[in-house]
Image 1 (spheres, rainbow, N blue to C red):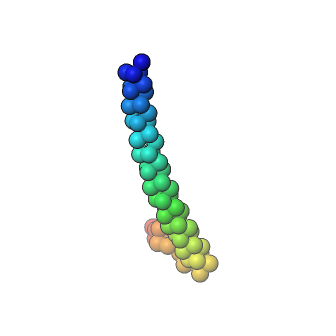
Image 2: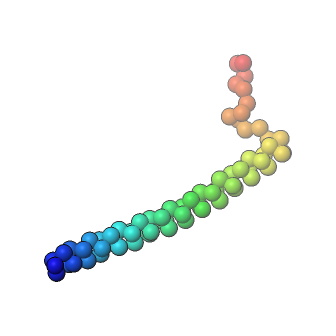
Image 3: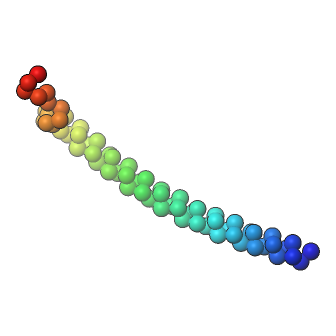
Length: 66
């Protein structure tokens, strides 16, 4: 009986460690997602300002041979 309890305790310890590791990964990814969202918002704002100013990007212009 003691061997089964010890085996269960070992398994629980591994599971707890796995949960802690996954929690750290999720927290890190949440930070990265928040940073990426801020960057996307910034880029969208910049693009909206360019459109409002009437500035055309070179990539949006047709080549002269068309």
